[in-house]
Figure (cartoon, rainbow, N blue to C red):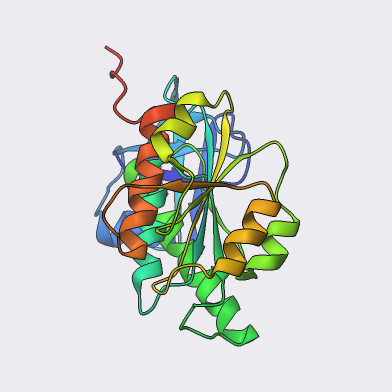
Length: 248
């Protein structure tokens, strides 16, 4: 069931307003007494029922706190070099569905798209809305974050040294991603994906110096959006909960 998120920590009653209230009333056509699954600011998942409803506001009362945390046991960060067109929208949506916690849009040497500061901010807002909607639709327990557009060099300077950081590269990669993951004991991962034109040799070198392991996804060259989705799925399958047996 679709989830709704509120920032406050909830005890008995929940107020949902803004676009979510409109969606509940006008799109989903919920009525008094209908059930909602709500996640509060502490990550608590609750089954609630509607006791007041209008286009501007929905008030729901908590019926039961659920043992229903859908988050993966690992943290996965996706750094995606900016692709052309609306491909980033697809990447954001599918990454959130797969369990990615944070997405960094990255500017690298071969990125075709060029955004000024105003467009960078507008794109970030749009991608965050897509991430929020995907999280609600697929039943996440958190709202993943889409960070601001960042230059690759700056991004590399700020990588957490505790991450198992991988750079997916179609060139002369050192090892298959499966082998790297099998040997890793980490529970926090970063995957860096290049743009349509791939990474330059210089970028590969600076990524290696920053501590990233160069990994291959296989013999075939994947489109950037395919590589992002495939790599996220592989990490979640090998180290997370993708493909895990369901409870009960």
